[in-house]
Image (cartoon, rainbow, N blue to C red; front, side, top):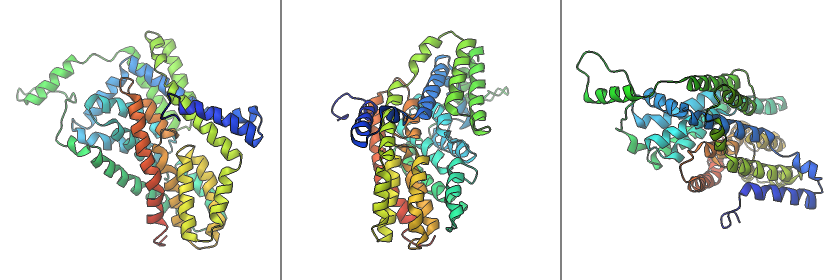
Length: 414
């Protein structure tokens, strides 16, 4: 319906959640509203508000210039730099690494002509590549679910399998979406010009551009401190990214009020509505027992390899519309009795479920995908970008769980 009529899918999700929850499941309206994903709402609100402030006062442009300096003008390296940043943040415990990297990567891509879908998905796949390190949220969560059961478990395999698969997907994506065309392209990155009098013409041009760059002002310094506080607070201290980013945005508004009213218009309300509405509907379906029913039916099939494949698809399809951590919390316990039978390798199956349930986070309905969509520059055709994300996420939903199963379960080596 939403592809034909101009109706936000999130609005439709809220209506469907109320209708199914109250009329079909018998939930009260208060119970339905309790399924509203307040954490996602705060994350999208706080981040889009904060980076709208950063865009308004020129901090985003400043960071884009510094990012180009980091790759020394070699544009082909930029997607991999942001992939690596996202992977490192994720591996050291930042659950929403995409929230830190995407608002920087997307304006960078827009400014220098890098495909926005390529850049956004490189950030997401980077985050997923590091998502199951032994000290990450996902890694410790899965270990906490599986280890007490006595089922064979390998933290190393759990970490390396998503890392390698997401790295390979990123490499394919890089080639398909024109990354190779960036090879040999150099743009000014504002390196200091030497004083020997023998600088190249390129250095001279860069020096002239550097001299023409506006100085860093007070608002930008405070915004940079705020963004640094966001990264340190979420990664090192585990603070809530939504509350912290919203707090920083409000403090910046108090200290540097000029232009702040305009910045508030940059909050991505349509994306917030989309993500929160869809997740509320999926949560109602989970509350109704739909997921448990389907999972138990799959396990009861009696054909181990087919059941394993279907469990991977169950995790993948649901996670494309919901929290990956929540779906892992459902999919792995559903698979435990199945794994205790020893019909398939437990180590490979757990890793396959981990990959299948997270690789689909490229979907604009998932948290990471929604963050990328919300970080897309305001001057692009957001509907067209949203449709491209839908097409790509559809491909990943179809092929990702199959790839995880084929590599980690079917051979039987884990």
